[in-house]
Image 1 (cartoon, helix red, strand yellow):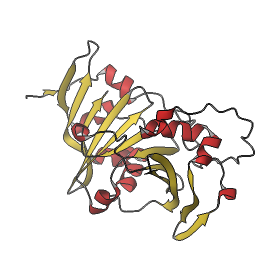
Image 2 (cartoon, rainbow, N blue to C red):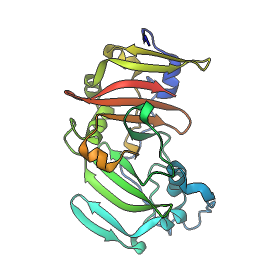
Image 3 (cartoon, rainbow, N blue to C red):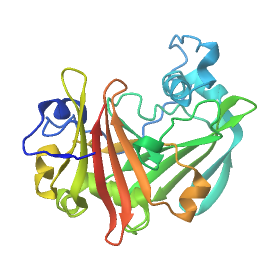
Length: 271
């Protein structure tokens, strides 16, 4: 299929992807915790019976309901701080809102959009990463499905790798924080797919020099990433990653491909 060359800014793309939009309010880089005693009087709505079918549904309640959260932690909880491993008993647990109060978050998948299937009943594990810009650290929550029930089984708080060429988390944190670095990692040309007002989709290409017109606004401060990539596959290395920026209703997909120069943005698609 012959692709169109985008020669003008597409307003609808900005609505979904946030290009050239006002930056959201600054978020605190620290991950706040509240003790269960502080939240004991909060009335909680019991999650639906099917809450474990789709991870996103489970995570929504896990972040917002302290009692439900505490019941879904596998104690003693494995904790890794830098290189120090320990185990946290139930009595030391403190409520973790994670990104419950942030409007925007990211989903991370292996491969490109055409290959992405959001895992539900088939998923074995999912990691939620809080990328902290200022501290250059990442706090990771590892969830595993145990006999059909999602449980938090491990937490880690570690510095982000300095290897932006191989480590995708390190690359993406810099990509989202440094516009000059961002521009250096845009493929020329890159694929574009835009949903128009009449519901039809227009596919084409844009030149790297046009990237400032389409640049995405990422969350400020801490960047929440729901990581659906397979840990074993990630350890071996992979050629593609897709980041989906979403507020739960609209979404924008960015596909990155590993090339000689490192990770390069090769496609942008609004949903």
